[in-house]
Amino acid sequence: MNILVIAAHPDDDVLGCGGTIAREQGGNEVRIVILGEGVSSRFARRSEAAAADLDRLKEDARAAASELGARSVDFGGLADNRFDELPLISVVQQVERWIDTYRPGVIYTHHPGDLNIDHGVTFRAVLTATRPGASSHLVGKILTFEVPSSTEWSFQRVEPPFRPNVFVDISETLDHKIDAMRRYRSEIREAPHPRSAENIRAMAAYRGAAAGMAFAEAFELIRSLRVKG
Image (cartoon, rainbow, N blue to C red):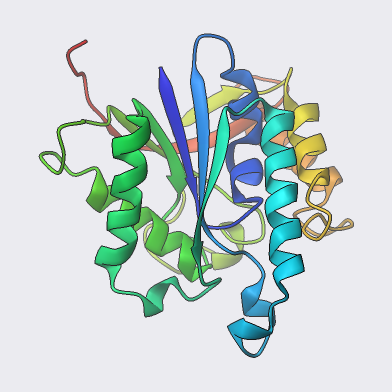
């Protein structure tokens, strides 16, 4: 089965479903698409972001994907934290191209209630690109993931809040997830930040406890279709 992870920024893929990516190896082909640059919003002007910094982040993303066993990682190059300045159709068309190229049966992407604006736009673009009849390829299942330092920081003040109803046991792949996050030299943080190794493990234990597992990643199922073939 082809599985496609569509993330807004470098590291969102690891934080949201890194353990699941590593678990899905063997009989499945997992590919990652990262739509945004990831660092340019840290500067007053996008042009101030050094090309070397952007290249280093891509290098880290490739190293993280390799750690998880993903088949490939592609980059959309959209301006960081500025997805809402673009016509939605331009983001949708980019997502449609990746779907047509990789023809996934399952897509993992962002939850629409995240604090980060790019996450919400990414979800909307995925949902629009996968609407029935949009292309000859029908995506069977769409799941959204949570991203520490975004999903929980919305404090459920935006609708809808993240309500997980799918749990994946990552007891054997959690260390791969944490090691992949360490590949992001500029993104991993020290505790008590949610993106620290300690709190990534704590979140996995919390989600696992809800489902009778040692460690788990949680997802909200948006749509599931039984398709031919």
